[in-house]
Image (tube, rainbow, N blue to C red; front, side):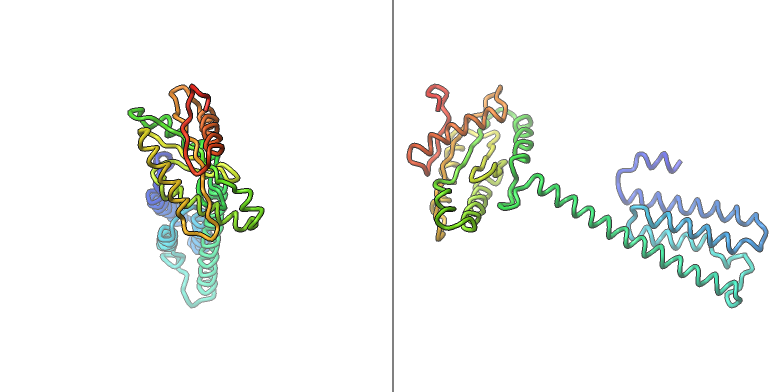
Length: 291
């Protein structure tokens, strides 16, 4: 019955309570079985049964309170001094106490070490996941994350207003790296990422690679995009810094039949136009002129 219930369990606290129920039921059953053995064997069999139960509990993904509650239930139900004839101060009793203390210490140590290992594995898995979907330098999403999240927005957000995709490139970034070094270049990238994050906080944005960034603006009007693009150019331009830079932006409307890659190509063409008509500006992709 517990196994059947466990298949429908999704919350950790429910698993903890089920574990306690299982410990109570199994230790009660073991106690009844051992009580049917000759009295001389009661003490040793109760200790062995307790060791098995506690070791099993120590390797389960339990919370601290559930594990220690299992310890208490186990020793209450499988107490080797209860109705067994074993006395505390005789040799058999002293050995039983020593073994019980050793057993408790060992299972607690095992439980805590396993929790530590599980926590380490969890932290490492989250770190690897962050590295897979976030740019380590700028601490914003990377291209892989952007393509996934932008695609979800493209499908989920109603088309009451248009969807736009913007590509951003830092003007003369190669010159910054060549003149001031890559450390300064990294600082510029981080600063631009922070500006994008501040201005475009409610949209999906990412660093695509190098000095290129992208933003997916879902459910907005063209005039809203113009306002946001102009604001971003202004924020970057007026940012107080020893190494000021500007950005160019290319914006493309995402048509109903467009894939994200097609939208990126259009935005890239618009970005090319911005770069070659003065920089520090934004340009919308226009089908008629091919720009």
